[in-house]
Image (tube, rainbow, N blue to C red; front, top):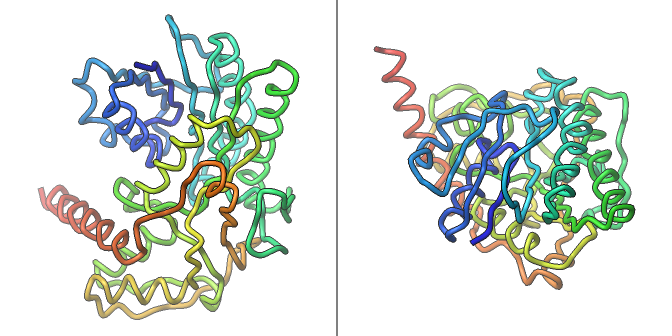
Length: 319
């Protein structure tokens, strides 16, 4: 049995990792200040003796008694809507939070895994994006608070590995979707799902020809766990190379839920990436990992979840 600390463990990805490790018999300590995470995501674990939740800001010094085997640093706003609302907090958790989490892992002699992002590639000039690509990021643009926070976090992680000999891993996570995404998350799939299910216009930014590659949550969790237990120190892309245009995805979701919602086009936000597709050769070769869940199946599961959430939301509003 391992003892695992997950920062941001009440978030979308973090909570699914809590579930995975608990199911494997590990002990999990979840740290989250609930700025963008939700207590609902971990409510089903609160009575489990192998799970502990601490409401905490990880930009402060981290202390937990006893041994710790793994530290997974997932604390950070991840949606553009969130990190534009919390720009300073995003920068702080990527810098100070990463420093505190690394220092904690070093003190415990624990393996450290950083949740980085495909956003380190910015608006890429190389397609698809491999881990050797250094990116095309605007450091002073509106998205820079997130992009540069993650780039700094990677640099800090590698510095701790090289200087202190800390056992580290870096996951570059591409667009991921599934159950427990917030209705008001602001990202593409939650927005399209809620708009289609409510019969509202589906808002597509730009002309919709920009592309994304979306990975279902169960596949992402498997990739993260395999990376954690591997000996791969350099960054690893985790995502689904099944590339789709934003407009095609909007239409697929609309058809999937049986909606008649019209599609409305709006101006493309500053520095919004035109293409996004992971080169996952490193993950295939070194982790034996690749996504298994098709886009159709993943979207069907996600639509079922969003229908339930919207139904509950309507009931609570009526009450």
